[in-house]
Image (cartoon, rainbow, N blue to C red; front, side):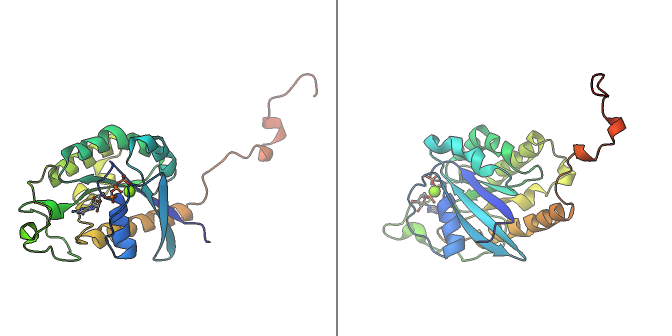
Length: 235
Ligand SMILES: Nc1nc2c(ncn2[C@@H]2O[C@H](COP(=O)(O)OP(=O)(O)OP(=O)(O)O)[C@@H](O)[C@H]2O)c(=O)[nH]1
Ligand SMILES: [Mg+2]
């Protein structure tokens, strides 16, 4: 198996839909996902590269593994549930610190999932993968819709905080509006757009890093002998 050229990691609280988003994108289906244990990954060929897409567990007991999965990540997709405000708060309180091990020019995307459950959705008119069913809330057995608890503006504010936390200048990073998404793994709404926007932003960065070569290291063997400190006893 070819070694992946870059890693993209999904992080977020339990039940927000990380596994469902990956399954929707990679397998084009929405099975009833089981809560993730540890982590798992998919491989995705994009342009000339192979990217690994890591699913992580939101459950508290696996929290410690998060920073290990993030090590060297080229992008992190921070996921919350638009119907649970606390899941957005948790991204800042509990998950952001796990990304300290990511690559130094790691990209951050923030994703509010489960918009299909929101009453009177107000979503920026982005590409739609599938239209929402019109009267889902009235169908027998359908989940009742509810007012949105976490708005896109809240995600944008978090994105700006992340740039500060990472000590990045807003003008050197992609704009918040480009990096904050709302999705539904259930209907497929915006799911391709989310992943493929992230891939398109990450690939040039990986290629740039490659072109710059490996990190500079000091080669002690090439130092001139007279530059080395002299020792009285062996001169
Ligand atoms: N209505 C709706 N339900 C969703 C959506 N995405 C996921 N779900 C449901 O939410 C539940 C949790 O989804 P998962 O994908 O397992 O969530 P997770 O973030 O991977 O959870 P952990 O693995 O425990 O961290 C499942 O019952 C899914 O079917 C969505 O977009 N809309
Ligand atoms: Mg999961």
